[in-house]
Image (cartoon, rainbow, N blue to C red; front, side, top):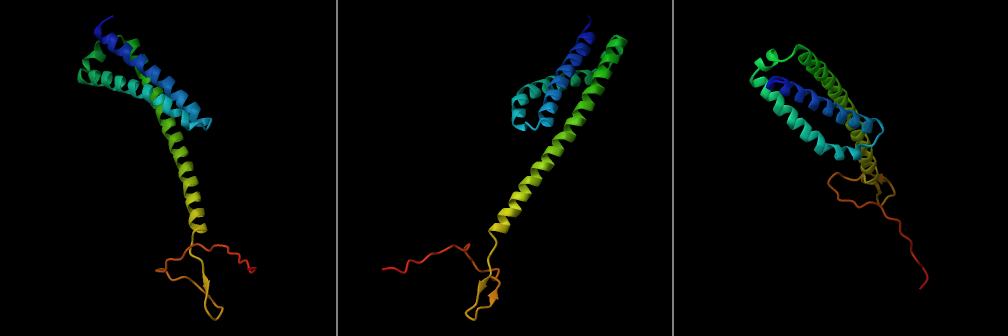
Length: 149
């Protein structure tokens, strides 16, 4: 096998490994186990760096593709298209998970804000008066007085 074939074969192998990692990532996202994604990060990063290095070598010398066997080039195109499809699907899933997480965070923040809002108070004439915006008012606290001495 020539250097051209080795490079193409290596790209195919790296693509297939990345596809496997991305499928695992996709399964974890679908099963709502995002905390387990961090375990894949190191492997995915190594594979991505290796893939990018080989792809860069191929882009530097496009004649390597022209000199390679047509069936290898066809397989590389097929695997690359499949890899791109899986990456796009994972991006959609990650964005959906991010949107859900942001929604939960916003709901919690709104509830905390609602619970910690300033409370209206009574005037000396018994009328309810809203708190002025510049007043520092503590959250009301329940008090009990013991009248026995």
